[in-house]
Length: 373
Image 1 (tube, rainbow, N blue to C red):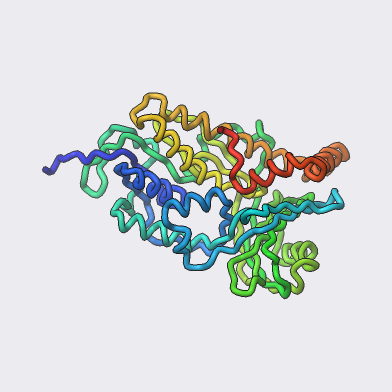
Image 2: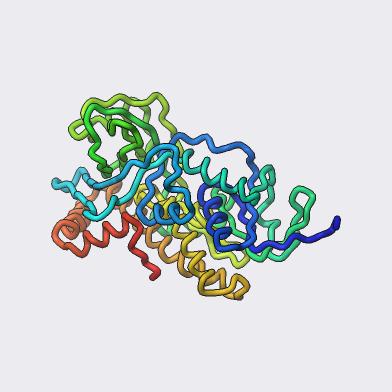
């Protein structure tokens, strides 16, 4: 029995939110799944997560949504403002919330508990991705395993395997994330402010009295705490009232990338792509990766020779669209030329004057507009 080979359908490398949820979705379909991660400790992340309506559907399917520790804060309206167009754009869906805001850690704790309950998680395992191969024996904790498919759900380790960023008009940005309390009710409205130095998003945060919000500001330029707080006050004091900022403001580098096709692995989440947060869809696109994978499984056997190619053809198309859109949007605002300002105004006018364009935007924000269908 010492040399026994344990045969599995899927190996998932990375037990973050997307990797863990993919494991739960595949296990729900009765596949044998194993998740490995180099870390044993739980996620210590106080940030929030904007979960669109489509992602809520998956969390409900996995039996997670109704068990979150903190009640999700609905996003009933999205208000977009900029320094060029005078009239703000307001979007809402009369039938359901456009999304919800939750705490990262609440979701992570639940998916981690489910993985442990199913006994499909092994931590303290640090493998080089290039050393892994489907149908090749792998020793994990002194046991030998063979996997038909290998799913990669880690981000930073595969940045070198990307499309050339300059072809898609993007550069490295910095992202600043934090919370503030305010004297007025946030009215379950999410705000997106476009400035010449970068976009600022303000979202309602889970709280009993609806007087707490979270922000994310992204820019190519570094900004100190005082200037950032002044910028936020300038944009939201009228709508939110007096502001009191939490002490901690976290800073993260943003390195947009798209992974190249690889027949050995299935990339999901940040391994497949990293999108500038101006789109507000990065994590939600990871959920779509999972849903697309499950749809393909329903149509084809995982042993089908072109399985990986079908997955990439479906996911890369939408990823490239989002990647290019966010890159161009930043380019238009940051260059601040007369021509680009006219293009921005034309886009605003289209959203104001054409109902079908607004409807597409609402479906896209909710994750219900599928480019690959």
